[in-house]
Image: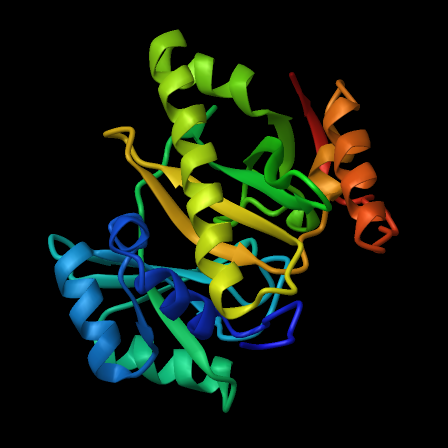
Length: 263
């Protein structure tokens, strides 16, 4: 068993999740980025995200769309977009941009939207000294109007998870999805604890597609509680900080770029 309390490699974390039959059904297909894997996922799904194997805050993440009708490949990175008329031109540009940095390619999920912008959810789960793993926070993140990533550090807006879900899915579906988030978080914590028993906190980035299916986009082993500083109700943040003190972690909470969405 590992003594590590954090893992930076998204590839390793994906493989940990894939070892669970239940969790594997909620992971978008994720492969190491190369020419063949990019062709495969684009041909199957039409849209993918490429992201650095190690990295955080949405830095370096790009969305690639293939339009068979137009015969184009578009890449969105930050607030910019480039359009190519052949796969090879797009791939050559991509290789120049990523250089020697190891990247992953992940099936793109057509997520729920708020005011036309992509949204997903951060779910925080922490381990108490005597009561074990508990979900301590849920927040919704809405992307900056010009970006494909929802991270607050990239200018995203933070909302209460329940209030935003009700606007997009209705009351009944909201209750079901919030329970699903809890189950995914607890199963993920249980899975990680087998290999990394010293871990005490995880932050799951969960997307919901238009069929209301939940997907784990990423697991953060040193999660930043900044999204919870933007909620009108500070009770989740206080709870997160209280749990963290129990295992000796403190947070800087310098969260200037994220915006308060409400709820």
